[in-house]
Length: 358
Ligand SMILES: [Zn+2]
Ligand SMILES: [Zn+2]
Image (cartoon, rainbow, N blue to C red; front, side):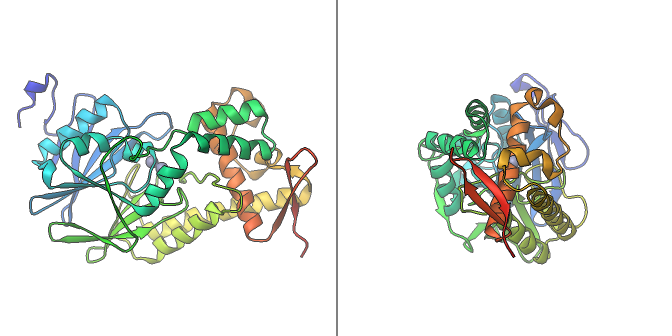
């Protein structure tokens, strides 16, 4: 392969079944033989995660790309080089996005413009319509104010996160939808669309049963616990995530490809450990409510066992504060949904938490 016309070194060997995408260390590497899967590692912005994966499944001249990375001119070039290097015909390529987050949908426009068919689950379209609009920002800010976050901080935290999803409709990116249990084909392989709510309401994973291969998006990661933020009051994202982790654990997945990092050991054990981690956190929240009834959600955040710099809250980056506050609220929603905790508004409209009478 000759990459010299691009002006920088790419397409160089980096071991068997591997080629570089530029001279910054990004590579495209084969990670499975059957189905043939290549990992394209792309730059991640704004979080502590080191990178985001796009996976390319190849069979019989067709390609299925799972997730499309963070938008960034360097990433655009890297993904396109990966496809050129793999000999992929964009006209015979399908892009599937597991969820609406920008690090999984960012390069959809480039792929669509190159001729690829873009497909998302119906639930992901619903998330795009719900979350990639300014009204969602106000909804998040208002919910945080109700949980006792100050007006200024609620605005600040909503601002750092609200445009984290892309809406293909308003962006005028052509796409089609698939339903849960529909099959997506690539050559001789068929992938089932499986609902995996929790990280987002509409997230779906892909499952190939004959080889027990799954593409998991951000349903479960080995690098860290996947972030579970609140949705609307009355919903239970932690409960949804626990059910998703239980379902994935029982599915018998042998080969898992996730949005960030790679599989390190048993998927089933990782799902069980992650579920136990969430359950411990909810138990901590319940104990904190029982020990001092009537606190607000914001007052309860430091009592939930986070390893976080609460002594220097003001100097903590807004993104970190958002993760702490939003996942704490999700745990309170879970306890309310389970009937373990009662939420009551005080005279100023702020929610206060009490253990349910048993
Ligand atoms: Zn995500
Ligand atoms: Zn992600």
